[in-house]
Length: 144
Image (cartoon, rainbow, N blue to C red; front, side, top):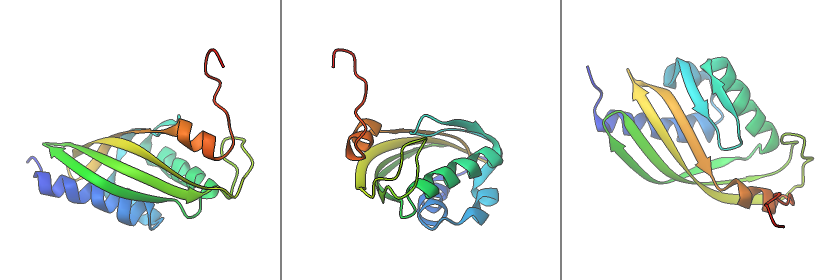
């Protein structure tokens, strides 16, 4: 049985509002497929729930107040696209970058495949150049 667009929309709302914004790790087993594939905007590719938990923990350690705001959701069948804005305060190390205490905001887009009531695949694309600038990391662009 194929899920309705409304059901898939609700899965993604819960994913952001309860799992990420509430740091409710207990929802991983309910919302995330055991064989999930996930590519995060911070350059991380994982598979499985354990990898997903580790990724969440990495983000939470770096930005304990990290918050996702859904600007728009578009759903077609099992595909859900979310236009997002992120904010948080860089209070922990992030991939070797010492905490800066800087409050950051940056936009992004996430594309999900929902199957059997769970997220089976996720791909998050964010303006990480804006994030890096805000925490004082200059990207190594050719010609700079």
